Amino acid sequence: MKFKRLEKWRDDLNICIRCGYCYEQCHLYKVTSWETDTPRSKLILLYGMINGEIEPSEYIANKIFECFYCKRCDTNCSAGVSITEIFTDARADFIDAGFDVDGTTSKTNDDLCSRCGTCVYICKHEARSIDKENKKILIDKAKCQSCGCCEAACPSSAAYIVDGWEVSEDEMSEKVTKFLKGVVV
Image 1 (cartoon, rainbow, N blue to C red):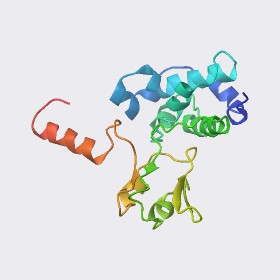
Image 2 (image 1 turned 90 degrees about the vertical axis):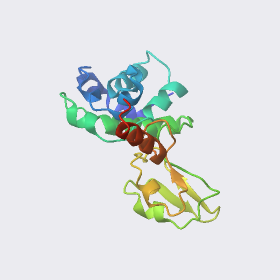
Image 3 (image 1 turned 180 degrees about the vertical axis):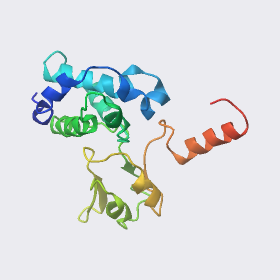
């Protein structure tokens, strides 16, 4: 299985010195406290894949699709590696290889969706489109950067990001309530 887009990043993956600065501000790492959720770990997995040391798997694909593209890892990288660009190309390669994972990419509840197109027009990453023939909102998982703009703009609350990452309205409300009540979170 060839990951042609990822292959162009071989030199950058060699430049990465595995220092760990990339995960100091990583939201996913702060939520889970698992090394495998850090940008550094994801780069190591991708490096192992392009060098034939490990095989692409659903587990690795899921890890690569778990990113909110805040780009704090790019900003903190002392080696200047374009981490989120690498993730975007890796996502496209995983999709081409037949992996169908969601990670943190946005979704649409078709039962609630009115197909108004607001989420399509608001998406600055051009990750959403309307399939007029089938009357569905389509999401390009390689382009989706989980920014939440579609969720915030959707008048029928059909666009969403799955719970578990402390970004949903309910999760944030719970965290704020606990904080205000003096409960340690």
